[in-house]
Length: 91
Image (tube, rainbow, N blue to C red; front, side, top):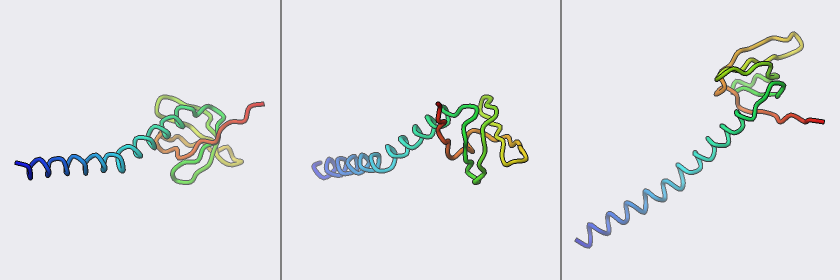
């Protein structure tokens, strides 16, 4: 009976360690990403996961339209495709 209790405690301890090492950091990253995407506004400069840089010109639900280059090319993307949002500097 003591061996079974020892095994159960050992497994619970290992699962707790795995939770701390794997799950919590992922939750923190997901929360940071959500906050970044929610802080995005029209006029923000963004970089996509594909490396395309542009300026946000429209946000609608889960879609974002960005404008790139001098030719004013417009690209429609899903919000999850945004990797980085540069903060606006307001004067």
